[in-house]
Amino acid sequence: MPKVKIEKKTRIHNEVAKQGIQFNKDFGQHILKNPLIITSMLDKAGLRPTDVALEIGPGTGNMTIKMLDRVKKVIACEIDTRLVAELQKRVQGTPYQAKLQILVGDVLKTELPFFDICVANIPYQISSPLVFKLLLHRPFFRCAVLMFQKEFAQRLVAKPGDKLYCRLSINTQLLARVDMLMKVGKNNFRPPPKVESSVVRIEPRNPPPPINFVEWDGLTRIAFVRKNKTLAAAFKHSTTIAVLEKNYRVHCSLHNKEIPEDFEIKQKVQDILTRAEADQMRARTMDCDDFMMLLHAFNSEGIHFA
Image 1: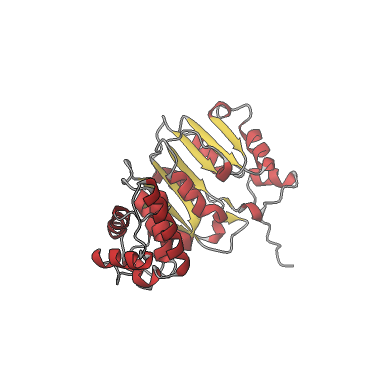
Image 2: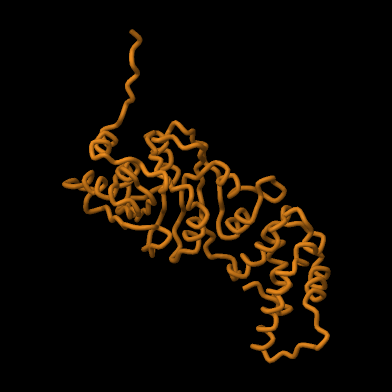
């Protein structure tokens, strides 16, 4: 008879199985099982013995335990109470117990405390909101080494003119330096996800650029709706024009500025784009400096995006 292949399981996964815990795909629970990748991520994060480290979605604690060896404290944010119990049991009665703080709940709804560094294999469905939650967190952290779905990671690092260059790319690169570190295959996870993964290093710009991010986000949202169209075409959309006119009238009211009876916001927007030599620009080829110039041109004429 042919030999039956027996699936190897680590001790911790056996313990989870004994408790009848099934990994929840709704929470993006794909546990990173390869210790070499975990070690590489921690090495590339440049952890220091004095660091407070944040981990999002620690799962069964494979990365958490290795991180506790290297830093002063680990703050682990976990939504699944079953895995919280497993992680607590794993450190109970060890020197690690006093160094681990667990925040139970949805990280997007949790007020994060101070931390120096973030290392995590995050649930992929919260990738975008989590990136901006981290980048807008104060006080600043030193860097984050995060595992993402491969295409999402490629969008983070994409440059003007690249096929995957989008609003996510420019908004992230305004606030941080982003570098691709390594690719990670599906078989390094249990259960294996349907997509390939990549690890990215994100280093916040400190001090941040002197830009109102809400305004910036409003401008890039308009420009990237149709990133291959000219800005002149993008700003002709009736919904966009209506919002800009409302904002302009509020601005004039607050500054006691009179609006002429024959005023047309569409013409004013077109004039600003023409003077800035941006009317024929396309979002897909514009970098941060281009958008900063354009935002200043609009704001100086009283047109705001928030």
